[in-house]
Amino acid sequence: ILSLGHGENPQRPLPSLWFGFLLESQADLSKSYTRLNPKQKLFVIREAPQTALPKLWNHWSITHLVFEKDTDPYARERD
Image (cartoon, rainbow, N blue to C red; front, side, top):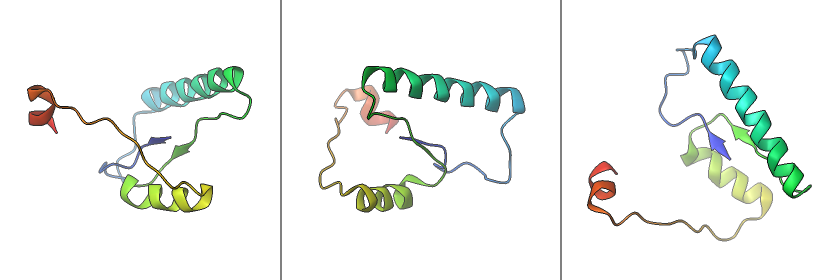
């Protein structure tokens, strides 16, 4: 899942060349995933992760979330 809604201004559109490149890249990535596993697919959700993820967890009956925490000084300062 790639979220495009993490604080951007929805009234400010992406430049068309960049948007076209982004869509083409996402389509290619989704096809690559599907070739590896036919049940696998890339979903692009255009909503803030804080609201989109809980909805998707409920829809897909997801019960656990696993992530890696950066412990490097650079990552702690960045995040």
